Image 1: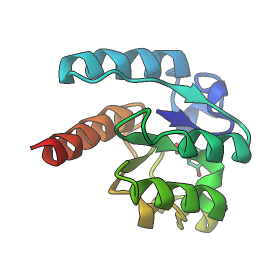
Image 2: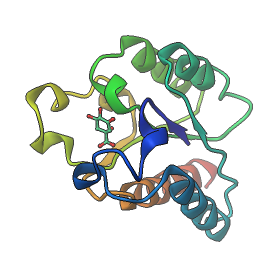
Image 3: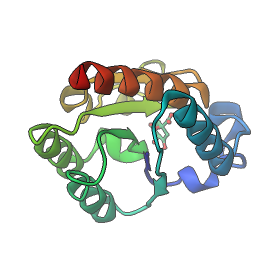
Image 4: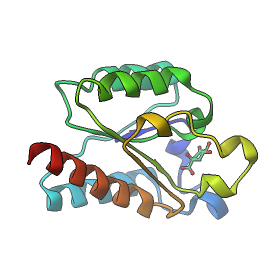
Amino acid sequence: MIHGPNLGLLGRREPEIYGRTTLAEIDAALQALGSELGLEVRCLQRDGEGEIVSAIGAAPGSVQGILINPAAYTHTSVAIRDALAAVAGMGVPAVEVHLSQTAARDEFRQRSLVAGVCRGTVAGFGAGSYLLGLRGLAALLGEAGA
Ligand code: DQA
């Protein structure tokens, strides 16, 4: 699980948009669901675009799949898109998640540069988006292993 910029502030950050669940609570819920699904979930949050690119690049050989909320970089980062495309080509699928329904927000949030290189997107369910995204990723990994 890769959390992008400003998501370390969840719980206190614009709660009317992002809710009151903290990042630590989201990570704990992901890990609990992961153990139900037979997956180990490792979570990291980075504010820097380059650090996120490096984390994605380190994925092959280390993790089976990526769940990512690129936050504001969703709408701006060709580098993160390229990193996700690169590792997808090496057999590491990604699922994009967002707390808010980005399609219903500012025009600049309505375009995702990463969506086209992710296997699926879940947005608009608050912290629930992460759990739905993990279920989707688990299903993809199950199909790949089948
Ligand atoms: C977000 C949506 C982005 O537009 C925004 O920049 C974020 C959070 C979400 O989860 O709803 O930081 O990715």
